Image (cartoon, rainbow, N blue to C red):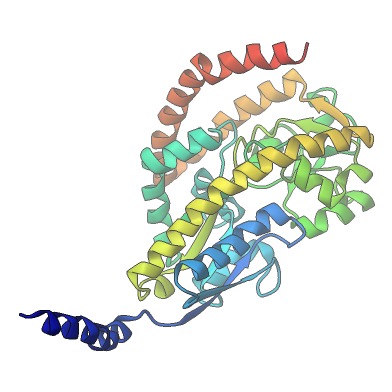
Amino acid sequence: MNRRSILGAAAAAPVLAAPAIAQTQNPEIRWRLQSSFPKNLDILFFGAETISKRVAELTDNRFQIRAFSAGEIAPPLQVLDAVQNGTIECGQTALYYYIGKDPALSFFTSMPFGGNYRQQGAWMKRGGGNELCAEMLREFNCIGFLCGDTGTQMGGWFRNEVKSLADMQGLKFRIAGLGGRVFQRIGAVPTLVPASDIYPALERGTIDAAEFVGPYDDEKLGFQRVAKYYYGPGFWEPCARGHLVIGQKAWDPLPDAYKSAIQVACIETELEMVARYDHQNPLALRRLVAAGAQLRAWPRDVLQASWKATHEMIEEMAAKDARFKRIWESYKPYRDDQFQWARIADNAYDNFAFTAAAR
């Protein structure tokens, strides 16, 4: 072929290729995503916004997911229901909000005295947790992807000081997940209240105490104005894994490129959310203490009673529920191995370095 023929073929190539590209271009798709969290909790709602934004960027704006805050379409604690029945295509939520449907869902958000962010993440991603979660979500005609974490949470705000286990008797405590059942066993009266309703409930005395997340979010909700005693840590939430749940009927027909875009957006959201909390929480805690919050550690007898109650509860649940038992038998040895490693590595370092820096 001579030079003129080569140039002519090259010039013609874009014209010939254009129709083929047009034929394989992915379709325009519009979804709705509702969060379980309000917009004023900007790090939590950031999860929904970021997934929406990144999916659009990664698909040349052909796949648009519109993010709605808590309650705009469905009640905040019914996001999984709304996805399951097809009201919305996907939702950002925490699976332990739905332990009334199946208590085993708590394993995939957080467990009392369970693993922290890294330890829970290792079990989910390398220890079989994601596969067990997928098995459960199939029963709701959904799939799910990890899309955030708060890190270890605080233990909550109390109108009156907790000096011993006796002070937990009859105490009305806003608390989520299996942690509520642990506190019920040690004498408290647990209740689950959406984020927007916690402050007025504390102010009116409808509840005596409330836990939510940690200093940054708690400051935004103003709990320090109505309950000055701030306890830590939240031993029932050493992490709090968020999920993007997606209806199976919405997911299945998606082009592979769109499925990959969702997964990439969820991974980016997870990493960034933890970084934002680690950045903001120490700053917020200083402001809260300066404004009069009384920082407290749990009395030893409360921790001991809670540890005992937690493991008694879990063993009882495992004895009655074969699937719960199967997940616990995966989770517990993995957690225990992680605890042993942390004692040698992280904890040994933390115990020296943190105290040395405080001198």
